[in-house]
Length: 554
Ligand code: SF4
Image (tube, rainbow, N blue to C red; front, top):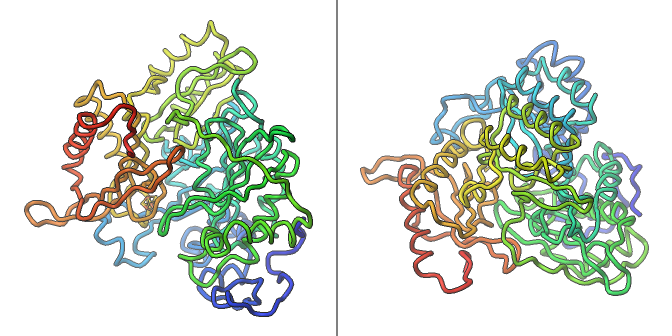
């Protein structure tokens, strides 16, 4: 097992510089910081900024914050400055960070595995209403994001979150980000293996541990024992996916090196079978490989996917076994891919204990503090007080007896949280966009929400699963490359020659069976105003021309 007691600044064993020296790998003896991010991480561990926030910045105010803390280390505690209102997308690339940002923060609360109690949900709702102007978005990593947070209020928000077992620790930054976990782990009747204990122990070992708080870049983990493969395991840095080994029984298949943004890559299998109790060791070994061998010279080559692409899965597994675990892993089978397209658990489903879980669909993850409090009321009145968030920006109430299901679904409908959404509401995701994000070029959530309304009105009987993912910039926070229709925000030229908000279209992306990245259709850009017409045309044509059983991506 890797040494977890080593401080972040401690060097791994120095080795002779190899051919990767130019990539800035610590394991190749490359300890001189090669860019600004590596420098501020070396100057001080991001975790240490918490003390300064609590004892200095929350008292002396926004203007007193050290720039390397403000735009760097505060991410280690889930805090980003948010975009100053009124700055149009055309100026995103030309303004300095201090011109783009205002004095408020986005705060991300990590909800590993999407597991919430109603007590926790109420606290999130109260914080939203008291400190965040009512904002609370459910993200596609099962987190909740607040906006409009003042630095003065951060210690009190932490106090309230931590009092109920929640935190913002390493919710952002070059760290082990919030773990995706099957939202129905331990509950679903069809489960292969319950990954809950493995997820909790893995989190306990690595999150907030200085041994892993200076990684080359962000590090995304997913663990699911659901046959629905409900954690987008193909696009995480490391994923543990439930499989049944013919001799050894239920365990996990290990995937590494997935990720989107520029140079998107699907993860690859190591071909190793890992029993539940070994998941934390194997995870620690993989995150340690990333820390020691990951590329630190260029930020856009620093994700694990680039190392995996260069090494290949055989070498990666060999280094993991020989240098970190000090033992061999058993070979194991690949997971079976489900034929069903939706992985979001929307609707009413049987639990293994005879009760039901009820999944519902907020619009593109947008809820608010008052609504979260009402969801907590419903969960307590109909279930046992357990709630989940999903990697598709949806939510689930657990433990509902059969005779209470109808009352719960009616209560959710009254909050515009339907358990039977149209394919458009079910399949549309959107990132934060220009409303709050400093990198954004265009609006996303509001536009995606009105697009859902428009498509429901125009195509009321369209029932083929279709995913429409809307991004506000070339990054891929809303996973545009894996959607049937991916919309990448940019300025485009309208019919009158004006620069207006619009989207580059990617078509045919998919996870699951036959995974593929959407193809950027050359020259296919639509203005925001043209979007409903364009998508209606694409879907109408697809419906008219598809062969039997053909999915959108084909
Ligand atoms: Fe911001 Fe771009 Fe990510 Fe959207 S995709 S949240 S606009 S960085």
